[in-house]
Length: 568
Image (cartoon, rainbow, N blue to C red; front, side, top):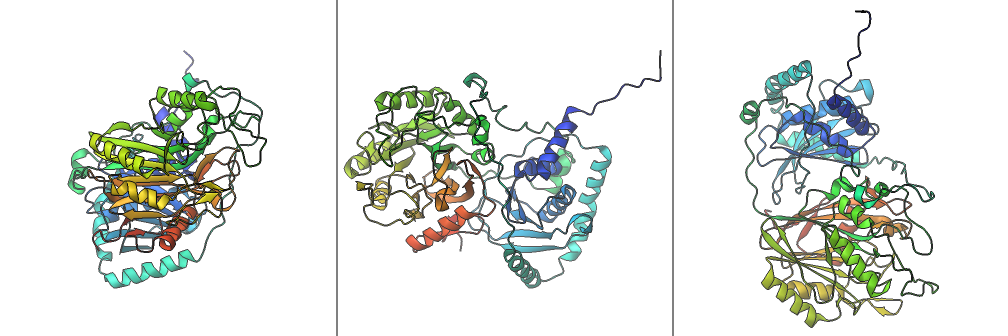
């Protein structure tokens, strides 16, 4: 036997995928960073979420009781240093528990470039007010090499004693340092990173609907990874998670047009491009809602005369219902001014294709859509300004529908498509709005009326720009969620290109508990991506303060929302 030949031993698939994940993380993929950190911490009771704003990386830790946050902070700091992320100059590890307005801790680490990063990082621990995120469940991870595991185990023994010495500094000193550091950070803003967008290409090789699956829409999940501590050891260090009170989580977005094949072909070559940058943030919710402002049909002729100015008809191939399903949606409104672009047949086709994918289509006239969520019955009703649907102009019928829904369900969600459109439609007033002479309704009067008669959450869309939110009788009203996806169909100029994912937590009575504005922007093709500059947060907060100055809501710099009287 020829012993000079030694077969190469390939690394395990787990390590190969971890290496791929590290490459994605170094490229700035916050989902990959979150997966790596979850794997390193190895604590099944801990949820973790990563977000970036300019040159600051935020890591939110969520668990019911976290007695040793400083240990987590140091380990996270070590992993971020190893990744050497371009453009990141500060790490903030934040308590992200879902509780209304508690005093929360935060650790701030300065990140100096490359090899200059210190072994003992400058850190400041301050108590701050941060509203609660709802992070995704931690992914599984890959086996850690024994030497690495031993080094990390030593951290768990030695670091607590070391860290305890640092707590001799008074709270006033640490808070002063944090304030000084935060002020310095906010004065320096990085330029936005370049957007790599899909370009105009000929009709390509879209996958057929039978091949549309979660696996080929998302990066592969990190394979299972041995935790660095045993279950008993982890339980001794970190108290077990307490059961959270019952609640319903809703994530909602505005107008969705995946492209059109009517008259001119405007569809992406790769359908994954449409939601690839934002799909991570559409998960972890009981209801994921959007306004589908197109049709899913093959009807050849439009009901509209598109030769007239400002008249558009949108038709999307029926198999795109699978794309929306894979993206994470389970409720889509079809009560809007484009649902009948291809006659009643086009509308019925759209509803049928959505429901064939297991999603709920909301918007048939007189219909109340029911669904079960965590053992709770939720009713959803769609309204528009058109007589084809339930209309915002008919308040008596709206009241009747909401009261009927309240008898059938535990929670009632109302969706409306109304209000004027365009860059000057950013104001929300208690008055009738008009667009090109068309009555687009009084959205404040309508929303408050349905809340007065039983609605628990009101989701508005139609103006194509974000608008204010209001807490009215403990119920949240979002007056416009803006554009979310308009592949080569919707303008992205100014506020038309600023968007958001609204995350709302409701208790079993339908009252608003807390929420979050996840900031989104649209690229030059009208495709959403996570906005590092948080424009959606800035706009919605400003509009809310301007249009509803007395509403009892607080929105912080990172977009977290809670009732202003919850625990103050």
